Image 1 (cartoon, helix red, strand yellow):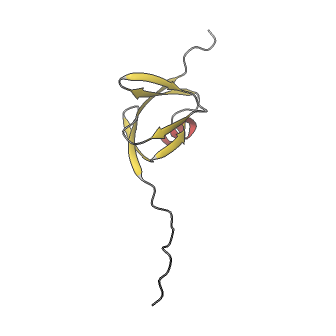
Image 2: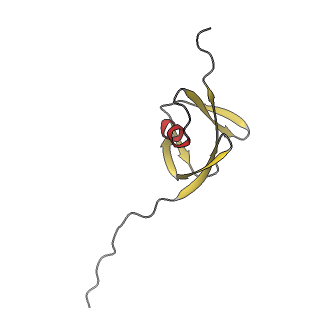
Image 3: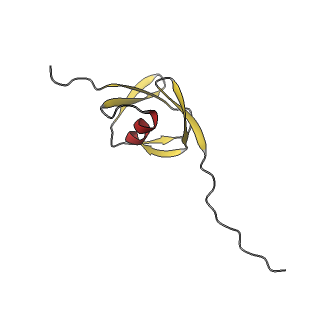
Length: 84
C-alpha cells in the first residue's frame, strides 16, 4: 500500500472573545486593523477606539493594528476636540 503525503489544509481559525463598550464579540485570533474592529462592533468611523490595558486607556489610531489574543477590552467614544 502506498502512503500519501499529509494534506495541508488551512486549520479552522481560532475564535476568541473581546469586549467593546461592555458587549462581548467573537473574533478571529490574530492581527486586526482598528477600522476592522470598529466595523465588527458597528462603532462609528468618526469615533475613537481605546484599548483598556491594566485599567488604563490607550488610544488607538485608525491606521493601527491590534494583536488579538482573547480577553481584550475596548471602549469607543466620540472624538474629543473639534471646532467650537
